[in-house]
Image 1 (cartoon, rainbow, N blue to C red):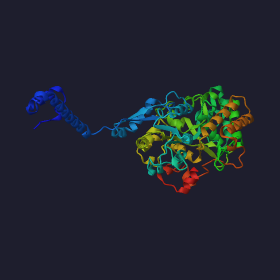
Image 2 (cartoon, rainbow, N blue to C red; image 1 turned 180 degrees about the vertical axis):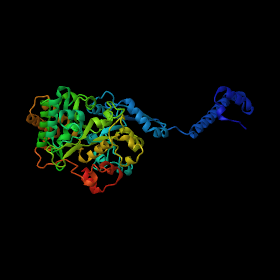
Image 3 (cartoon, rainbow, N blue to C red; image 1 turned 45 degrees about the vertical axis):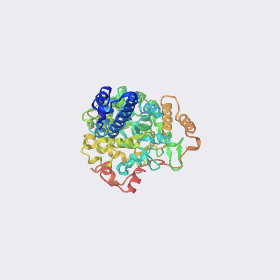
Image 4 (tube, rainbow, N blue to C red; image 1 turned 30 degrees about the vertical axis):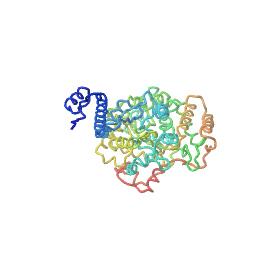
Length: 539
């Protein structure tokens, strides 16, 4: 009987011992060589089979995978993003030890336009494309049209989407297919320095409230500031030109444009509006405030940051800007904190051109997470996205000092989260104002060509502000460029109807009473409006 234990037959000495312990198989005579060969073959077979059994029966380790995340760092930092992502997905990472999470920037982008320039380069190749990317929601249509984004309908449960504000979800949905998980919603408004407006005589010495009802009142207020306070104070800021990128188009220009009754795109015939009265009125506003020294281009070079600083220092009187400014610039822990904020800075809705209904306009935007369509393990990536975008993480992301400071979470049930109270500014009146501004909201058209059209708007602004163009010359140049960019067959020169793209045409008073504690946004958080209500509000 041969006594074989394969684990011990792994070297020459062990084989020798084996032979000595089994004298019956010791080779003899002239068959000695042949016998040794047979023994070696048998031993190799035994050892190989044993080793094979050993490795087959051992549990195999899952292959190592990497999930990369891209997000803008121009308003934050790589460290802030890395810390947020790791903290937000700590439990998920613990349950997926074979997955490496890596933040990939892109670094070196100082504006949203530069962020997308770098993101375009990254997504041009599957070897450099991030698995997950943070998208300004208006860019969804462009990336979807280019085949960059993965559809999420089959990867994410429908209940997740039903818990998202339609105002946000609609901007990342194309023909019923969801291409992102919205994580932030924002709006635009007017900020003003109370003390400066009091000194200039725009409001009384004991009055803190100013609400212009048309554009003329904004211009007149800026003129008073210039006359009474001199060159030490900038009367008004509206972003302009290519350098400020989407801050020019979205935050300032479109906030005014959509208050004229004209928009950028006619959904009834799928055409872009070219030369029209709304564009004329908006460019005329720009031409006047810059040519008369009521505004300066210097604040457009570093969007948001310099405005935050100048408002803090009392060097800026009025600014058309975004709801994110409080958390991003002025809240405790932000870049330029203003103690007792509402004592020094007031807020107002941006009026329509001549005060016509709905009387005010606000541009609604925000950000969301999308997945690269070339991702190999989409189910794994979707699981990570859901962990990253849960309600608690949405709140954390938007907290003052956070990576996307100043926005509102997009989950309807966020108000029930214990951390929600940490998101809102400390002044209840400011809370109410930000949320109520949503009811006057308009949206950038979710059409693939929008970023190109936005760039044309920026050029048109720059032409009238510093290029020496008359408004009519800038309009004709814009029209020509628009024809070349999207095709003349896709351009409508003079709209035949007004209110071309104003999704919010007013809401039932029970939802909009600003004196009611159950203001619009809280109503949306706490309740399930009917489909008809959603239609009236969002589309």
